[in-house]
Length: 463
Ligand SMILES: Nc1ncnc2c1ncn2[C@@H]1O[C@H](COP(=O)(O)OP(=O)(O)OP(=O)(O)O)[C@@H](O)[C@H]1O
Image 1 (cartoon, rainbow, N blue to C red):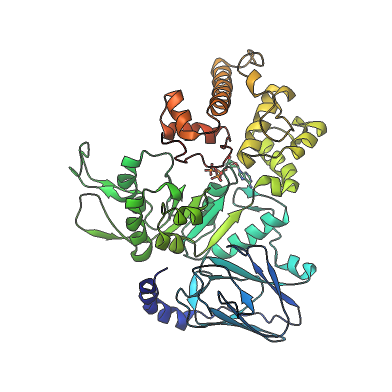
Image 2: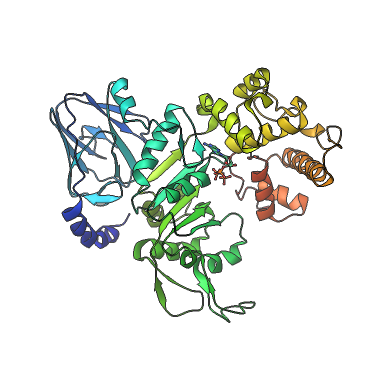
């Protein structure tokens, strides 16, 4: 973030400095560790015996953070027997706790600090102590999970839900980003106000501006009347911007303005309208890489990434699969016995490249079509994908259902064969199939399919 952003934040900082007294519980004699949750050093843990620690980019810091948005000497941690105090060392981009910028703060275990794009969490070193800080819930909104990774996510979400901070949710396709956003809304004081979803990957780029910001009559051909955009429609509530990485570069400053000033101007209009809302954005692409590739503005990324939740892929938490299966069965109105133990055991072994969405689709298919439709346990391509469009068809089902089943099978078979033929190259696949990229992406997401490089939107083959 540039120095001018920092200066712009000064007024806000002064306001927050007066108000940011995060209530502290004494840390007691628990031995603490500082965990790096995101950024280049993600996964590193630094033990913190009593003492003073300097954090920053400079090699002479006690804890060196490899993050260009972190200052050379960014933060000091004073660890005493019964308390930990964090002091910002006059950093460019500031130090944040739960979305609020601070200069000095008593930090309680479990709290997440954000320096630049790096998130840090202070945790007791003893896992028994640590588990006390984990949420005991096995769900947050409609998201379910019992794994440590998901309970850590739930802990974070529980803390963030009541606040007004904007949130960025990252995770592969099908990991539950939309459910997470909805949960944040439902558990916030904004719950009774609108929750407006904008899927930026599902809207033609030419329509995104009007969809988000609205337009006035005559702003462009076809603008027959005034129309409020998503931000205005969400007044008082929450806007969920799905696939925010798809926002065209030229519209990104307008989103930044909405986030920073809470005001919006309709396309073709003159007046700014004041907004009262929370913005939750999600992406399945690596936005930091998009920033480096100059496809996403750095200032917007930093603004969005102040509070980040990363939803882990299902292959990293197979212990969640039994509960997820039961949840899907319940939503289908089926008892847990609808799936045999043998099938459940097979489902535990599959790598789930399409994550929970794919699991849901597979459970749905197996319940309706039998075990023939189980995926191949061999990592990669489902086993009988190519056989479902004809032979397995259940003609005893009502006509509409049987037809949907046939079409779904055809779509999946077609996509698998298309992507194989095009070696997973998205643009070429859209061209060869003669369908729009937006529609192709929608179809792929519906069937829980990812390209081999994980980038269904990549400009892979301009030639
Ligand atoms: N933890 C979970 N518990 C229960 N259901 C889940 C969970 N995660 C995902 N799902 C289910 O998986 C499906 C996909 O979820 P969702 O649309 O929230 O994923 P997503 O990460 O937003 O995907 P995409 O990036 O493709 O938009 C939904 O049907 C949702 O109900």
